[in-house]
Image 1 (spheres, rainbow, N blue to C red):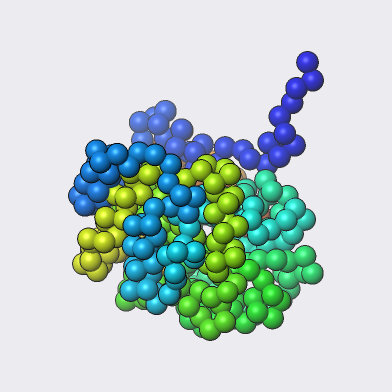
Image 2: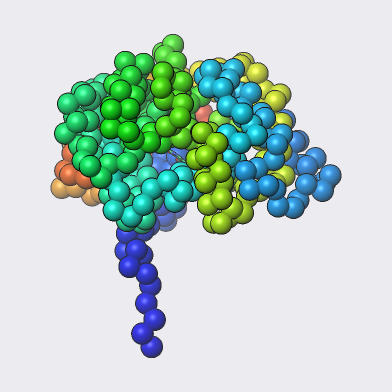
Length: 386
Ligand code: PLP
């Protein structure tokens, strides 16, 4: 028999986040590796989905999603970010932000293209690109503020560059791109005629009075930007698979056709649950969630500092990258495993977010946990000899 897996198979390995989650389960530890939030799902979201199921909304939806959800997404975008999108033609509901990103890559990029990505990066972006034969080219953000300069962008661009990815707030650094930084990217994208793929899944988790700015709202950016986000994080429904892309109608149609091809549609009744949440929850809800995460960030980062694992305090999202170089081991993986064995707390080795060695002294912790679980994790971490 000469059957074999595809040549792209080796490019899609099990992620380090899943690996550490498996190791954590083996020792019955506390999983701060996985980026899931323990907050309760808002009641209106549950009720909306339940009613939709009972009323028979259990069949395929249109390839770009239910109109109720497209309208609710467009209304919230306009209210919160000023992004003005037509729900008939510019909004495509997807199976999570992940589904939107994959469909957008299929629809708008070709094998051999290059895409610029800021590092530290979200691994799924890189694996998606690689699996499609698209080359990621990295622009490294410099701590503590995760900065970059226009010259860094110019150094990375080639005649093959077709797009740049902007993840704001970012995973894993929690970087919130400022208007000045977004303007640099906007000028650059216009000068080199690039698509801008955003990933704004953490847009509601921004701290210290900062504001999330949707890159598509910058002058000249609406036509070239694919705004990608979703409800996984803000409604704590990562398992429901509800996300979306907003863009120019021509790109939206192409993205919708590819998402139709790959998974037909996002789960129908769950789309209606998400729509209900968007319709009924007001600014208080979003502010409350952000405040809760900020409080947990402060407590968790203080603990890391006390035990000598100096954190990079994030401006948004719900992760912190911390310096774990004081832990025994030669690699981030060995150090993360030591931490798990010693304290029962799982994190993600920083090597999962960098190409070179930079990540070997870092680890990512997710602090979006129920308070009593986070407290338990902090108590266990404090048992580390300092
Ligand atoms: N984008 C980023 C940056 C993420 O960190 C995650 C999940 O951790 C996702 C997308 C996944 O979003 P979704 O559940 O909507 O596919």
